[in-house]
Image (tube, rainbow, N blue to C red):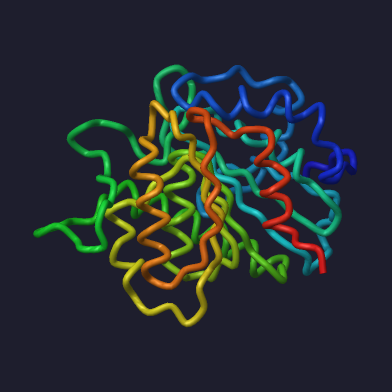
Length: 270
């Protein structure tokens, strides 16, 4: 496991300046820094649900309990793109798992599904499936892989809470996996995402326990329209999910002030 310096949420200032440009460019691939690449390589020693995973935590391998957060990057980003976000949120008693999406993209990035106009999954503006809807195989495969990753985490470490945190395409997948409900997820942070049509059947299915959501979206987002992001919030609330909604003036990005909100949502103080 990658063992990093113990730095809790109080250490936002320097990293905040880096996080927005790092996470805000899902259409362009960053070159990983040696430190981040090393973290990814260390986590890739084992496969979790068939995924290569970087891990960020100060917990030892034999510790159980605590909290687990699975962090899902956006389309076209390198697999370790959100390792700095995990580092910024790191605190004692929490394990972060940052998987690389399984599909390669041009330029060295990764994707949970490709954006081919003929095969990309449609976004949902309603809670009614379109006639003759067929599940998207890439979404099903991505969901299955992340579910297997979570199942491994739960079996190995028995965390008291499990959370999903995703940006852009990773936000869409986070919502989808949480709604699927097996294994159960307690909290979801979905930044600049939407509800997929592939998630609608799970949205409308009975949920004995419901995850809570923190959704954020930029009003000037040129990549994922704000209107469809806000529609996800409305549909989740319609079906009884508790949603914290954080729109902001900005584009396709993770704004620095949001980090404190994410920290409070994931790790509420008693």
